[in-house]
Length: 355
Ligand code: ATP
Image (cartoon, rainbow, N blue to C red):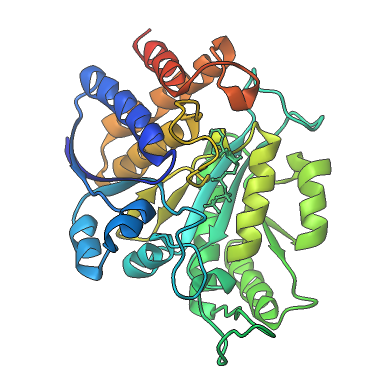
């Protein structure tokens, strides 16, 4: 089948890792009956700094007409809006497309060393992305030199959608041999918004009682993430806790360079690595493109499921196993202790794909 993919390379290492992922997708086109038409969108914090041009709602409508969006990274520490916050399109895109769940699979690939002893690390962290403090809702008064605040609002409607996704993902994962279990990480002993979240979780868990469930306070749950990560299958949390916990989880399996992510709603999917624009290493050709390549594989999986296209799902699986082979055989990217650059890592995945 033929798919139109909107591509937003963005800032920092975004364009570098996007190039690597597109090279891998090109190899898939030669091996499978797949065709991609790419429509590139030149939006970035850097463009905003140079020209004042920002993504508008009509740009987002245009981008949203594609079958899926591949997104590198957006935002630079020194490009800020009038509110002092880093300028990026993620929050607006999530609102515009109704994206509310960021799916972040975390698996220890053989050949990659974990900083912890446990080896049974295979979980899916689901971060809510439309509410909580990250949604950008300010409190009633303007920030001043003396005080500033952010508001954490959580709604029943979003919690219900979020937890249904978590239980359905656990069911899908169980078919692959994982336990089929959902854990909520929250702070209902201290935050009113989390009291509601926990209540809705209990209700949704009762409706999905073929799947096991557990709840931990975010502080203890973060400790277990490091001391006993094998206890987690699907982990779900609100926006800011989910952001932090997904990066702790990524750290267990080799770091951000290996951490893919998919922001989904019923109609839209935006696929981007969990990492940001990494300005400290941008332009040097040393970023690890694996997270972006695995995000492209998640895109193929999502397209395959939506369109009943088995070829897409097969291509997604072959990218995942090519990444696994490349990680085992090398060469290794610098964040994994090797010396390989972005291109070399992508070439290793491509040659594993065509082997
Ligand atoms: P954001 O808040 O926008 O997600 P961040 O503050 O978490 O961004 P990143 O840009 O993700 O920051 O970078 C965090 C660290 O991880 C940096 O030192 C960066 O160089 C490193 N890093 C991120 N992505 C990669 C990658 N693909 N390959 C190698 N190192 C990376």
